[in-house]
Image 1: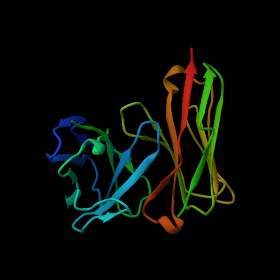
Image 2: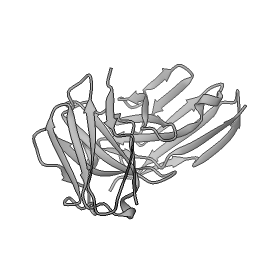
Image 3: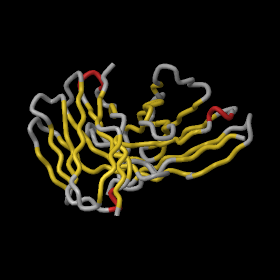
Image 4: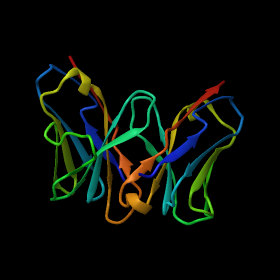
Length: 115
Length: 112
């Protein structure tokens, strides 16, 4: 159990375009989802926390208008990188948890390359 | 904010050796989690610890929740090549309730 599926696993887009990444909990209800960014050989940097049906809470320094997060259902959250630039190239990972449980389960990650 | 110090940053060991890594915090956590990340993949949960002093095993992995609630360690016994990856500790609770605070990671390399 506790499977989180993230799609796509890799995406290449042109500078100035937008990219949407999906995160789905397949066998549990994800009341909270988290979006992280990870640079090579570094730890995970939390970007935002989203609760189902509510607006996402962004960490300091993360532009909410650039990284749009939608958590419309208990099984799906999306991250849209708007007007992407090469510096947005990174590994983006989502995680999901249910209720008051502290364990979070991660998706496979999405390698975004902006050219 | 809360910080986790994870050590060592990297380890190079021979197959069959035991491995130990740990995390310390400047503040108290209510839950400690240990994850493993393979290259190009998301982290996978290995062990979750919920009580101070708790010692939990998962196969060749053993982790403990420190008595002070400010530290945790992970041991891997009889390492094998597939143990290669990045291991992260994560804490939940205190001022970061609901979120996980991650350590910097330990990069493990196992030589056959």
